[in-house]
Image 1: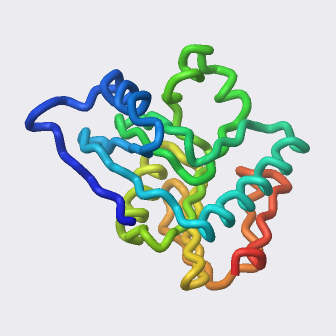
Image 2: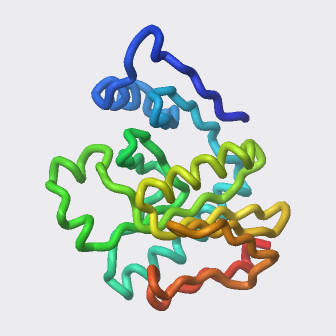
Length: 191
């Protein structure tokens, strides 16, 4: 279950409208689009990865309901980044004021906004270098905090603007009070 990238650019331009129609015509397939216009067919996750993705999303959701600071999104949400890429992180969070600044039409489609926070949970079908490219793309497009979690190696890569990637070995928790006040992700449930 590997992700495949197809470059249609020499034949047809994968515009926003084309991409949206493609997604609507194929609701059982998860697509992303790179900044250069290549189409990425994303492999579905297996049961174990799906379970951990859900558990992480629940933790974000419970925190966000209490904090009321933003909006949480699951892996089905595709964001249009400033560089033109259309990406779907496993978990995303956007500050409420930034989300509220979008028009209802912008919210209904693929939101033209870089999330404040993205989380990617490496699945067995993922190539880590491909996910690292994606994490750097998020950071370069305005994401304030990115966590790449690799359950197999028990490592977390932390991406922040203007900083080198920080690698944490077997952390028990993840937090960043400047971006996610009072949020703590218990990593012991992941290992």
